[in-house]
Image (cartoon, rainbow, N blue to C red; front, side, top):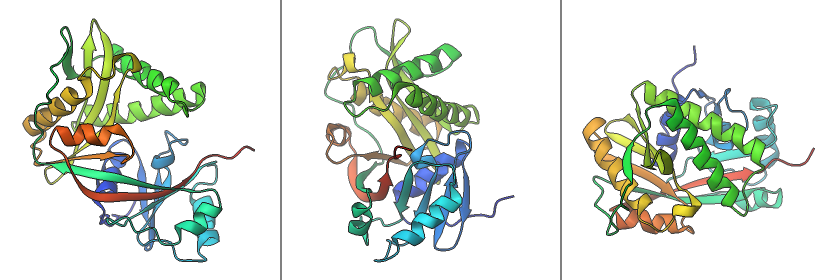
Length: 275
């Protein structure tokens, strides 16, 4: 049996780890860092990483690379989360010279979402996923979103990753932790997201996405608001948490329905290298 692990200081990673555990991840606390493993989805970068309790010090790159390889010997990616709520990154430049990308996402929170200005298109229904066919639709949506991304991952590899992510979220839903919600029209899923309780009245959003053919029609805003109300009614949510790339339009969308920036979530990631 794994020992209990410390609660991260950063709200983003605190909710991340709770969600990963719900979806089947294992967490080991090694004092100055944690090892997170998701055996069912080994190519999930942020399901198989190290969470450092302090920013990396100058000269520590090789030490952290060795610790990552020891924890994830089969991984081709390398990812480090930094448990620093203010965005401190330590020796990030040293890691950048070794091929790492510094990520600083915005953690936004609200007690309650507000309805968006745009009305939901006629014929669209918002509801939790219920059937195997619904989950197939969720995977089809994720594949369509990836295919439309100029930097989208190779299709077969992404299908394996996306299927594993959805399987974990489905298991968390079936265990009563929350739900994956969709915007449906004629049985087709046009937008989706997950919303899961992580304890203490805190609820975290996951994977907000809209089919490329249905963007800019008010689906995402309405679904984010619907999910907030669903979480308040079904999960006793008091604090809603969502994470966004500050350079992406999604953060502005979240702010329009009531979210406000609270913290910065910092990480270092290096994509898989060619063999």
